Image (cartoon, rainbow, N blue to C red; front, side):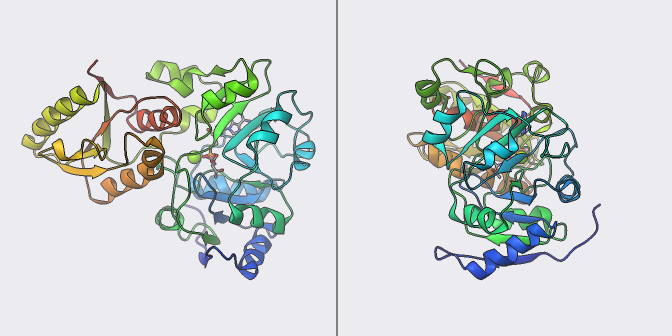
Length: 355
Ligand code: TXA
Ligand code: MG
């Protein structure tokens, strides 16, 4: 258990209060921990170049030391300081998708301490678009290392409430900027090898990236449908991350009709065993269920609405003491791949396929 500290909450709205940003930026400069909103999920930030500050991130989250962090920047020039050299494909990606939910893996410069990148010879870099994140990095005038601001193993936080539930008393500052945007973490692309490889699917879909890059590989971990595929994972961190709530999760995949009847059947069975069943359903399907606590995560027709609410709903089921969550699988097109990647992980690859 890390040393207990007092957590200050700084609430900001549309009109960002520069005084509060200055307070938070000063905390970063002093080696403290600051959670802040981004367009994906909340991040837990510290000075990326300061070994001691970065170690405290790992301590506060209970994060294994071999899981590398993403370094957040506010201007493109910073890439030249953090990367040993900038890979050929990086320029056009940065131009088109930064600032935004895209993280690029490049060879690491000597300026970045080993603790930040789990001693890998690469570094992950992202320029977020959220105005609060940008203001904080600019004001601190430092690159900010930031994993998602949850306890290791919990779903990523999409509101300041989630951050406080996990990290209150472990970090100095939380900037409360309301709900995040996309709701799932950035797309991670490895540019350190000859063919760009997607290590983690995110809001920026594979389809968009292929348009710019031509050939793109998707790592087995990103598709990940079985635990075996995970052990092949390149990034050590990828296999650690479970995104899992405390309740047991099962994903049921197939055509909506079959998914509904399978979930109904399983819910009835668990209900008879006196287990508290939660059903993660969509707006189009929710009213078909007759047992269990049914929650609408979003619309099938608009998968981005599912991404927005996914982690919040998983946390809500936990808070309500649900024993088992039965989740409807969705299509893997566009942001759907990121959604299914997180759901399958949360389920520990406990997937029921109904064709
Ligand atoms: O949207 C996001 O990316 C959020 C916000 C806060 O920016 N951050 C985030 O960080 O999700 P984190 O630490 O929860 O996830 C970072 C992922 C991990 O899976 C980690 O293993 C991978 O990126 N990663 C970081 N550096 C890497 C590297 N050098 N090589 C391979 N994978 C790396
Ligand atoms: Mg994380």
